[in-house]
Picture 1 (cartoon, one colour):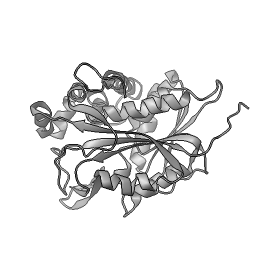
Picture 2 (tube, rainbow, N blue to C red; picture 1 turned 120 degrees about the vertical axis):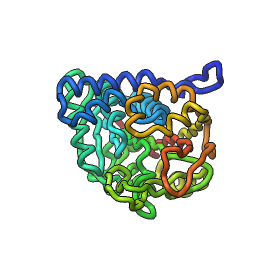
Picture 3 (tube, rainbow, N blue to C red; picture 1 turned 90 degrees about the vertical axis):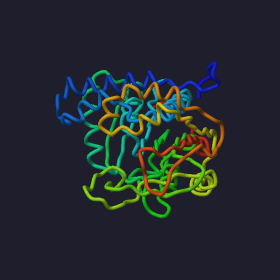
Picture 4 (spheres, one colour; picture 1 turned 60 degrees about the horizontal axis):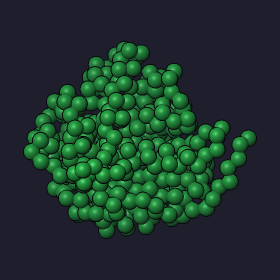
Length: 317
């Protein structure tokens, strides 16, 4: 992360990602009109980054990729794989970097939406975005295909007893030697496999009151056992824990309904700057959560960067 400011917190560049998100939303409105529907079209403008917790993850992945790209000789376009992340991140990278960015998701609707948004900014983009439906546990790519693989707050939602570890294994498989893997997951003081009421697959509304698997919130021990120990063939290079000092403002904001929070999305950059702070290493972030997901839950995020073992010799064709 960047240098500390006078309060001792790390600085996160909220404005950069928020500006891009608003611009993406406006471009979608102008070029695609209401193709995504009124609610989503307005939501892409009013709440382009869906939570104040996201900004440190955006910056960690952005900076990790940019540092990796410094290794490339001029004329070589790197290949980047996104496994299921919020699509604004991948579109930002394809727009700003001269890279080939593969945006994947197991959810067809998310892939189709990303295609629509990409067409809105394609003309002015530096790179290229390719879209496909993929299961992170069994990626349809050959070995050593990508220079960078990233997945933002995804693997905790992958079902199965070892779904998270399976994604890590596949990510390393498709990564080139010397390539970078960037993963973010929630972390707190205890390991919990949360359920959520009325949503299946972490995103699809079911319209009922049944409970479905939602996510894992990791403890430091669980991160070591379920993620770090499973990253065979890669060396862990950087670990940062994002803790949150949530006061009255953030607590009150969480109590607002989803639609109201969407209308007040412009507050997310401010809340990020006041709530999020980074601690090097794996830390049990201050937390408050139970076995059923709630909008009032409090926990942190763990940001991890690996380098795949081995050295690849690059050449210009």
